[in-house]
Length: 349
Length: 261
Image 1 (cartoon, rainbow over the protein chains, first blue to last red):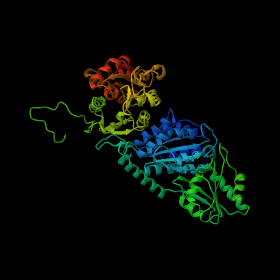
Image 2: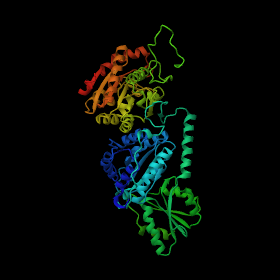
Image 3: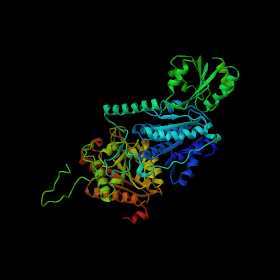
Image 4: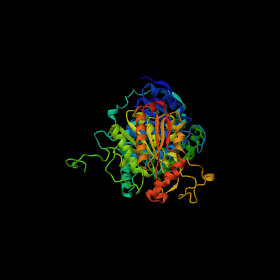
């Protein structure tokens, strides 16, 4: 298929359809509403389920219900709406059903604004809900990568029976650029629904999907199983990209839109004779600990740049373990850090 | 046990556990009416021949473990969210029979948004709403359905409607929504009310099977443990006080449902 000029949010929605999305439940919120709007006409066109829910709380629980039926299901929201979904994330994680969630992040806290932000890093990576669990968190830096990661999110969610979240920010969601959509994959036929799904106990024992385990030892056993799965994901599914790290003396670490900005910073810094490289985590969870630790032993210092008060920088410091100094530069409230601001920070290192 | 059970010559089997129930012993307190309601649902599902394509959603509350007692595919919802879960599930499984089983705290407090919106959309699932005027599982706190003056552990001097609001009449509230096809309030306080409840549950599932709209059966029930009464006292108290506030009968029967009756 040829490249076409496509808006990030529309690309995310259409990529989900191509990945075999069978049902979408969502609620309008800026800056992701185009995902909902696109699916509102495309899903019925494909004979699939679209429903505008009464709230994000209802959305995620509709997702939970459809996930229990063993179909590919998704919801989409932005920061305040994601906060409302956190109860549902926890239930879905413990129940081990697959679901995909899009978070087109906006400025916070509170109602904040509708400008691009990365203020939900902690929420996505560290505290998606109550109890011990992680979501797989994928962070695109372009419209094309958003498309690719949405498709990957469905495959990973199915493979590990877990939630996969794609965290974009308002800039990715709203920008238009040339991108190529994947070919259409068919939706799962009813007889292809997985054996654990709720399809009616015909000729088999009933399937039960629950997150309630009243005995302490029983619940610990469930948790140990979840942790083993998370360790497997952490060992298999780490993704990141590196840019000019081979001879780098200074390393930038940034994700999403800021990762893309920092690519420009690397070019400008090198034009001024500084040997700068970039590591851009693509999976925020699992975090690319090992490649970062390895690079940390080879550079003079690391500068983490984020659109928040300093969230991923904590994971960078954990990975670096003091091998080199780690600095931070961030903007908040929806302000996008520009190369002209980041370059002086590099020079001060 | 069932497999080995043979009927002595000259006798016939007149009563047995419905296929839609498991042999599990329930955790319910002595005198609790959940067991009766479980059995009625199971009998109806057996009678309609839909056990193998029925999916139930259990609530948070005393019936949180209902999935151990129904011999059906089941999921356990977050508190109040069963109608949203049932919506998501039914929309991708239109050939299945889906029901939620919810208590008064679950449906009439934390889950009011989900039940009203699902009913208003005319979702094609059935809700069994058990109203015993108290939060049972957490130990007898005031519910949205607790009667005026009724003492609970969180309204120790009795529910004061001036500060705590009035008990919510859900069957009347849901009945005004265009998407609701069949809404009724029944009880399980004696044999006649139990028999009428069974008929209502059957009509509710028939409403769903015919695709006529949302259906809900509110069932006036008892909680002897948290009411601090014997089972018999609880039944009598419910008849005297609950039925005075919550009148029994249909609150919404659409024309197409009436044709089924």
